Structures are given as C-alpha cells and as structure tokens.
Amino acid sequence: MKIIVFSKQSHTLEQLQEKISNIANVEEVPVCNSFHDIDIEVKKPHDILVYHLSPDEQEEKVLYQFLDLYQQSNKVFVVSNIPTAEQGKRILSAGVLAYTNTYISPEKLTLALNAISQGKIWMGDEIARVFKELGVNADEAAASVSQNTESEQEQVKDDEAQVESSPEPTEQTISEPKPSQGIFSKIKSFFS
Image (cartoon, rainbow, N blue to C red; front, top):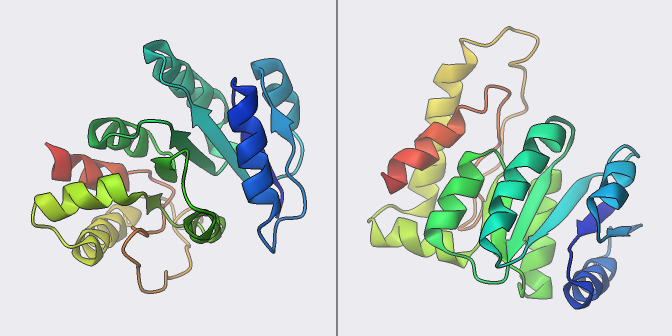
C-alpha cells in the first residue's frame, strides 16, 4: 500500500510518516508539507491520502477546497489534533472516508487504514461516543447507512452501482461508500 501524508507541521508529518511506515502492508509513505507537493504526489498511483488538519480555523475551509479538487480520485483520511463531533460530522459529510485524532495509536491506525483501503468509512472514538450518546449503536448506524445507500443505488446508473458487499462493521467501521455519496445524508441525520 502507498499512503501519502500531508501536514504543514513538520513534527506531525514526521510522526505520522513513522507510524504509517511501521504498518506491515505499507510499502511507501511519501510526505508533503505544501499544496504544491501534494498536487504533484496525488497524481501518482497511491492508495490513501492522510490529511492532517491543523487547529487553524481557516484550515478546514482549505480542506474542503482540496476535496473539491482531489476527492474523486482519492481515499482521504483526515486526522485532527483536537477532533470534535461537530467537525467530524462536517468532514464525514463532505465525503472523507475517515476522521480521527492525530495521536491515534499505531494499532487503531492500522485498523483504520485497512478499513479505508477496503473502501469502508472509519470514525474515531469521538464520533463513536456521539453515536452512543444519541443511543445509536455503531453497528445499527452502519446498518442504517447501508440501507440508505442501497436505496440510493437504484437511482444510480447500473455501471456505477456495482459494489462488493461489505463485511460485518466494527465499532469504528461504518460502511462502504457508494458512488452516489448519499450515505453522508444519513450520517448528517444522526447529528441534526
């Protein structure tokens, strides 16, 4: 697996690169600390882009601009120094496949990257806690999202709607994204 890591903070970039490099099935971890670098790197074959979202308020707006340009051809995993349920809601609703804490443990990072590489949506503990507070089991949320997605697939052309069935979701694994990106409306409803 080739995973690109982006951060404007050199210390965070080094830490993420080291953690990801130690994962068994990861072959290459190019790092980018500018949008010029990332523009070059995302055009090369890769599996996942890990995007570090700094605490700067403007940075989230920059992330959305980035997603507008590159999301269609990338599996994007966003890490934040201070993840919140509200930010997670916005980011997952924008079509990002994963959102969690920058300081994620190596074990959970491995689980998250493997889930994303299989086309699943993954959330960190902060978002899982919000589901729990709402009285929604993560597995039930995954089932609801999957049901919503299946009905939306009928509205998508046959060649776009062919997707492999997903395995049983874990606490952090939500669902496989489908071409319509409509599953995010279901996630939004849990936070409305």
